[in-house]
Length: 121
Image 1 (cartoon, rainbow, N blue to C red):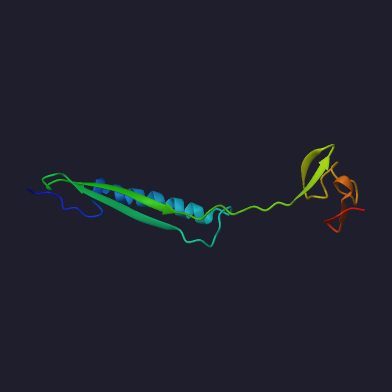
Image 2 (cartoon, rainbow, N blue to C red):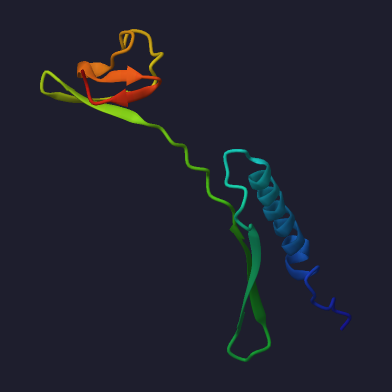
């Protein structure tokens, strides 16, 4: 018989190349996304699993790419915790929030000096 010899380009009629290109595109998007950490190494692992039938004449190949991308960058926020009428409340630490802070004082008598909240009057 004149069968086509198996190599990485012929497995699944070129599916390996197609899936690799899709994973590579995801890696590139992850690298360009400013919300993702820039330092971690990205990785594509090509996993092939082969199994044979009982008489060992037919082989089944299962393929899958495994992608490792960078995690989303953490976002930091500072809050002030207060208690008003027995209820705990959290407020963002932004002295320019209209209506939340009066000039130079924070909730429940906290004092804002130069953008820093201090323990009270």
